[in-house]
Amino acid sequence: MTTAEDGLLAFAHRQLGPVTSLPGSGLPPHLRLLAATDDQRYILKRHKDPNRFRAEARAYTAWVPHLGEHAPRLISADPETLSLLLTVLPGQPVTQLPERSAAERHAHYAAGHTLRLLHQAPPGPHPNTDIAAYLAERMRWWAARAHLATLISPAELRTLHTWADTLTATAAALDSAICHLDYQPRNWILTPSGTVAVLDFEHTRLDARIRDFARLEHRHWKDAPRLRAAFFDGYGHHPNPAEQGQLERFGVLEAITALVRGYQSGDPQLLAHGRTLLTHLR
Image 1: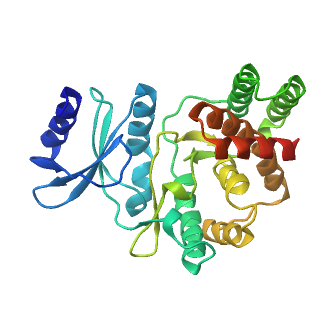
Image 2: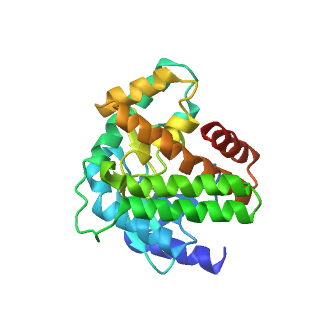
């Protein structure tokens, strides 16, 4: 066991008493499944980026408690090891449900309800943020990275800058809320009671509410209108024409983000998704 691993288990031990790391859990390397002496299970999540650690620790402190049983509970956060100690959510990953099944449709309905709870969370003390200006800046930043990597043409770069300018000009139409910002089935757990609980809050922040629908709209619902309808039934509100227009425009940000992240991670499927979506939206 490495010194870093010793430090992680020491952090968990201080919070829970003696713990055992369970092998063969199938979790990615940054997650570890632990068993305490009372046979309760916990997740130890280690971040590499201090900013991501601080963002997720803040989310678990400020907003996640508003979700109650629909999210893990934070036991402790350790700035020294950039680690979070969390309770385990019982249930089945929604990505493992049979496609086009009643269970999959129900999971989208329940996920809509859970997202509504997050969007209703009071933002609390928060610096004044011009969300439209921030998103326009992010758009230009992603576009610059894509252009530097020769993923887009100069004409596409100009188109993306035009989108950013348009977003700034229509700032008043954006409704803000506490957003998950990676809200999709890979982060959903269907619990034994039929609710959906949510994982991974490292991107959570005050943002444009419509953004939490954009990834689903452009990555998961194009060929699944029944899932889209179920989700918004659970959310309690379907997009009106103005919101639908916003949702389409935010597809541009989804496209360029997928394009760059697919390139950086060597993920051909994500890269192709970004390229196809950007071409379609253009």
